[in-house]
Length: 284
Image (cartoon, rainbow, N blue to C red):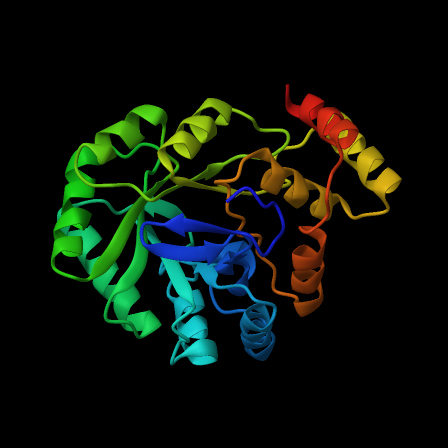
């Protein structure tokens, strides 16, 4: 698990996946709400992802809502045995598209069944509990609901999203955690210690928004490295994440086949020691 190419692998419980995955969030309409402008293009992106060797897709029934899962089913079902789908529960959308907590026991159970139905699955490979801001519910209690569904055979493995180290520990008291999905990139390094701790435990870390939250100065520093290497800024950011730690899995999203190909090719970029040192300085 030390190879940093896009074809290297890591494990989610007993599932082995390539470290380069795909995030389906952008397959929905603007602001992840409603249908896409071009459903055929969304289907083409998913099929191209599999053709490029991607074997895990990150999604959720609250993307759209329901839209991305329904498109995934239309594009790829029946799924190849090598494909693993990771979803999230714990949130919902209102009629205006706002993101709201949905973490009662009944809501979590309903969300799991809704994901199963819309994806056309009998068992979900991985379900992440999404911890929402302002959610007063106890993480351990919510995780216990998912652990019960896991014991019923509806879920193979459990993870957690937007979680602090303390919330992760609370979940681990209930059931094993195979992955943590949080905001992390070159400019947002708050999870550095958590990533190292997870790596020591053999737990995957899945960062989202690889270019999110950069200041103009930080963006300029990234662009300088990218220009020197003759690569795109997204390629450099993804390559840095892959080389940051062997337990990092990538799920960059796009609604464009061309951008998907660029992401997969760019993530194979090998950064030298000087490149890594210069990039590390951006967020420190």
